[in-house]
Structures are given as C-alpha cells and as structure tokens.
Length: 317
Image (cartoon, rainbow, N blue to C red; front, side, top):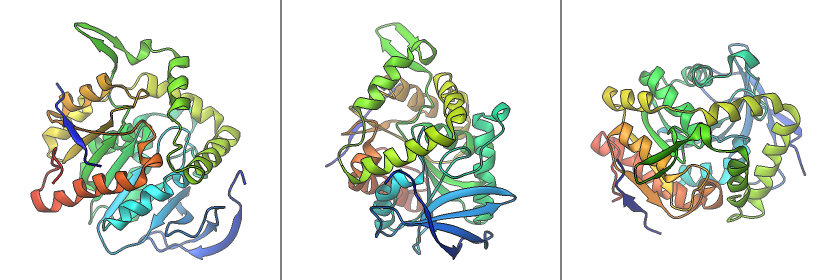
C-alpha cells in the first residue's frame, strides 16, 4: 500500500521471571512477563526510575531509538507488533506505559495534565540516554498529544516527532465556514467510533492485547482514565505545535482516512499549526494496531529520512 498525501490548512499479564534491565541508567532488577501470544522480539520490563515504577516494552537493535507512546486506555502490550515492525525497519524501539496506565505508577489525581505526563516521560528518556542521543517520538492518539507537549517542553531530548491520529487539534467538525470544537462533541460519539474502529485487522492477536490492556486499566486505573478522557476533550496544542515548528524539531502528521475518532478537522488543525502537509493513509483510528506492517514501513521511512535530510518529508520516497 502506498500512502497518499493530503494538503491541509488470558486477561492480565502475570509475573513469571525476573531479568536485568538493559537500558542505560536503569540497571535495576525488573519483572518480565510472558504474554499468551508471546514468542516475538518485544520484551516486557519494569524498572524504577527515580523512585517511580515504569513498565515498558523494548525491541533491542543497533539502530537509533524510536519511542512509541500509546493511546488512551492502552499500554505497551497493545503495540507489540507495531514495535516489532518498526524495529524491522532498523530501529531500537521502546514503548513505555504512561503514568497510571498498564503497570506504571500513577500521577496524583490533581496533577494529571499533558505537562505532567511529558515531564515523567522526559525523566524516563533522560535515564535511557536521550540527553546525549535524542530519540524519535511516535505518538498515537492521546500519546500524540503527550509527544507534542514533550517536544515543546524538552526539545533537547527529541530528534523528531511523528503524530499518528493525534488528539492535538481543537476542532471536531468544519463545514464551509462553520466549526464545532471538540468540547462540543458528545461522549457517545467518541465511544461509538472507538468501538467501531476496534483493531480487528490483526485479530485475534492485536485484539487480545488491546482487551488485556484496557481491562487492566479499567480495573486498576479507572480514575486516571476518566480524567485523561476529560483532557482529551479539551485538548488544544496548536500553540505548542507552532512553537515546535519554530524550534526546528522535525515533525510529521499522519491521519488514516477512515479515522472518525480523530477527525479530519483536527488533523487539519495540527498541520496548519506546524505549517506542513500531512500524510493520509488507508485505515482507521486503530491503524498502528490493525495494520502494523504498514505502520512500520511508513513510519520507518519517515524516520530514516531525518538523518538524510534533517527534516521529515511529506511525500514518501
């Protein structure tokens, strides 16, 4: 599949063994889990970073580091095949669980903001050496907003940013000269599209991992899920995206044409703020999970272009 360019103004994991974390600066004994569909290259780890428990997945490789940041309700296990496909393109891939998701320690409920998520992620990245070797950020959905905030607050840690179905825009619908903001969007409309765009392309593997992560978060992290849902409804990072563009951090925006969770209007907002064209691919909101091969190829090609051109292209080679 060749992307098109659109111009734009067993339910839970159980501890099984322990192993030594291989990340620089995080040399602590950590738990490892074997998933029901295990056997791939991604390994599941936990570590304590400055007193905070961080759960993550890692696909070790000799290439540059790409960090995939997950969406609302999910955790790193949902992105196992996406991470492995991106690693096949020549990247060392790390997928951390954000605070209050998966098995990572939660934030105080009064401090659940994009800034706080970005701060915790920045601390983790510093521990793995991002100050000397900046990382590529790949943010999906809610994770895209966290990546945008991180690139804005800590550009020294970031080599490039790819936003995939990111919730960083403020507009829900745009028809002729009439606009409706995300704050006007009813919750039932969000949920309807989240359900209908469930990642069935890789069923049962992707679906099972998503259900595992979602089930754990609903059981153990429900207050965080609710507060983050409110953050998403009020999300407007257009100013931050404009500053990222000014800072010179390469940034690309990808939107699947069948995505009705993050709408075309929100996608347009992001690209207008960055002053760039966006990439439109086939798929829906669950594209990285339902079609990990295409995700790995498209994102890998974008990230590989950074070293060659010092910027992210809008047209794939």
